[in-house]
Image (tube, rainbow, N blue to C red; front, top):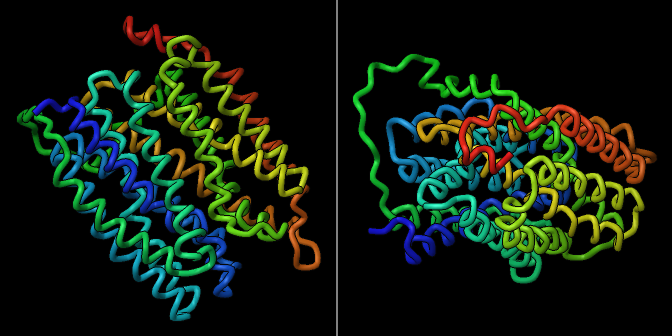
Length: 406
C-alpha cells in the first residue's frame, strides 16, 4: 500500500479530525462546566492536571513508539484509558462526588490522554513523503474537528455548561480508537537492540536535543508561549459569559477559521520566509490577541479569538514541522514528546497555576477585572516575543535541507 496515496492521506485526515473532535468536546468548555456545577475554584487545578501528566507520560510513550511498538498501537492503548477515565471524570462532576474525586479522575485521564495528540502527529508525519508541503493541509483537518466539536456542543447538544459534552467526547474517543485499525501501513525497520536503560525507557535520551542552540530556543519559547496561552481556553469562555455572550463554546471556534486559513498557506509561507520571521509572526499575533481582550468588549474578544489561529499555527505547527525536518528519524517521536513536555508540562503547569493566582489577584467583589487580567497576559507574551527575537539565531545548519528551513 502506498502510504502517501490519496486513500492513505484521507484516513490520516479522518484520524486527525476525529481525534481533535474528541479533545475539543471537553477541552474548551471545561471551565464553564465546572462553574455550572459549583466547582469554579478548581478550574486552574483541573487544567493543570494535564501539565503534571506531561512530566510523566509523553516521553515514555514517545520512546515506546520510536523503538518498541507501532505508534498506532500505542495510540489505541492510550485511547482506551482516556475514554474510561474521561467518563469517570464527568460522572464525578454530574453526581457531585466532590472536587477531590473530580481532580483525581482528571489527573488519571490526563496521564492517558496528554501524549495522544503528539503521537498522532508523529505517526501522520511519518506517513507523508514531503511533510513540509503536505502536513499543513492534513493538519487543518484537526482544526476542522476541533471547530466541529464547538459547533455541536453549542448548537446541537446545547451543552456549553453540561456534562453531556464530556460524554460526547467519550463516544468520539471510541471512534478514534476504531480508526487506528484502518491507518495506512508503514514498514518499521526492526533493529536488534541491547537491553534499554531507565533513561531510554523514560525517553530522557531526547534531552540532549536541548544542547543544540536552535532546538533549545524553540523548545524554551514553546514552553514560555504556552504559559501565556494557558489563559486562553479556561478564561476566555468565562469572560465571554460575563459579557453576556451566548454559545460561548461555538464562539471560541472562530479561532479555528484563521487556523484553517494559515494551514492552507503554511507551505507557501515556510518556502518564502525565514523560519525566524514565521515564529515571530505567530508570537506577534498572540500579543495582538490579548491586547484586544484588554479592551473588554464582546467584539474585541471575537476579533482576538480570530487572531488566535494565526498565533497557534504559525508558531506551534511550524515547530512540529521544524522537529520533523531537523531531528533524526529515530528520535522524532521523542522530539515531539519533548515538545509536549515543554508546552503541556512546564508551560501549562506554570501557566495554569500562575494565571489562576493572577486571576484571583484581579478579582474585585467576586468579579474579575478582565482588563487588568489580560494586560498581564499581553505583557507576558511581549516578553516571549523579545526573548525569541534576541535568542534565535538560525545557526548550526547541519544539512542543505536544514539550511532552507532556517
